[in-house]
Length: 287
Image (tube, rainbow, N blue to C red):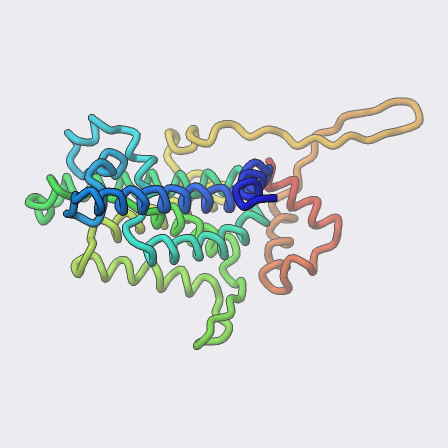
């Protein structure tokens, strides 16, 4: 199997949200890098990013946004530099797969895209409301997967706050502290450099937090329009066979059962779950 065939096979597999997001981000990055190489040899030297790509970045100016409304989605697949995409994809791979185990494939997509969109909206609001950005708004653009990735980071930390993470210099650190430090660094970095990027990150973090609260506990935290964004939930159904007939009975694990399972995971890991507990968690993640 060639590399291209292997990537195609991986992308087409079901239940593979994290890898699909990574593949698209990396493919777009490589494509834009090749375009920049061709532009260099063609003698078109200027900004590090191809000016044509601005049609896919998220502009702060509302007039420009009206001409390219798709950029509220496409901006989260563009990156300016190798380390920009590297750290985003590492975060996404580590914590995205962890989140995937507990809430399922579809909800990982929702967390990523929802975080990216809300991060973009917060970026637009701040640049069009606060006078400090008045002189910069015409040339300000947002790009990068960071808002969507930080949504996944904070969602995972909200769901599993005490999950242990091994850090090279600090040893074992609970996931909630890693998320808190990351968000705090974004807050204090706003006045220093790349304010639009840090603002978008915070929008993504806010979405990740509220999304998990919506799924598992406090649905009233979200306004009605945002609840409707995720649609109605479908009932999970289990089939029981008898000698005489097949009956169909809806089943949904209670919130108390799910909370106990999540507590057990945060203390002892996923492998400590019984087969029945894993089935209950799977049913809840697809509800």
